[in-house]
Length: 334
Ligand code: GLN
Image 1: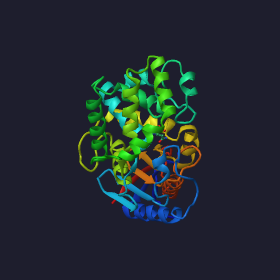
Image 2 (image 1 turned 135 degrees about the vertical axis):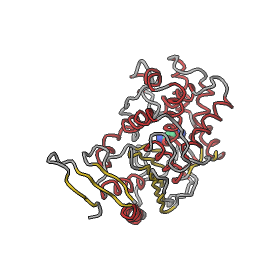
Image 3 (image 1 turned 90 degrees about the horizontal axis):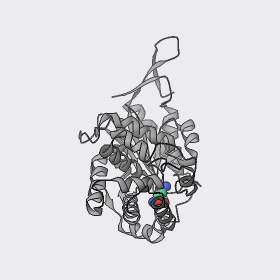
């Protein structure tokens, strides 16, 4: 039994538990070893670039709130951030507009439908539902300030990703081209949003969204971004305050509601950690007050979520009995 249960606090079954750094390292390595040989899933192929990424790449990274990181496997490989970038730009929009305006203009609801659903837009007649699905993410790009200036909006988006990750992402040109050439469904979404007066410039908003999805990041960088959210907006590595502490629970609530799209409930039930996926194979999880975690492996399940990344994070959470819904008080200690 790896999790050390220190003492029972009271009769209502709430426990104080400590997980040591050594235990966490051991369990991350175990998760890697157990999941590495899994052959489930297949690379996304609706974006041609992604179909050709080495399917055997696999890495897990954890960022503790004191800035220490644990990393196993291919945590330095730059892969397409894809929909994980929706979290970053949602944070930027929250920073620029505040929690209430984002709720009013975009929303924080689960759609219960795939990430690129068009019917979800038709069903929600007042707003796109959440910045963490394509429609809401394109809306968030439309809202990023300064309005109407694509170059400056892009600088703001990349600057925000850099602050969250603690180092700069790199645009994968080939991915950007591949995705721009094939994003017909997203073009429909952008123009439908325009039809409902929910965005300003559909071409500019879609291009910014496509470009942000094509940013190359490492699992290590994503774990640091998740650690920044878990740490109330202060990057644990650079110590920079990236966003106001009051926004941390807002973004985590959004991730918990829709991070795995139509399978978010199953994910929360089986893993106990709010996490956001991307079709590049990345998954980024936030355990508030404890750590950020990211895993990366290209093969996906039918909903576009990395098979190995899911298994690895589930393994770590369950083995250490960590769970955002638990009544246990858990601390990761040195
Ligand atoms: N850029 C991708 C798309 O819009 C992102 C999807 C995803 O990662 N779920 O289709």
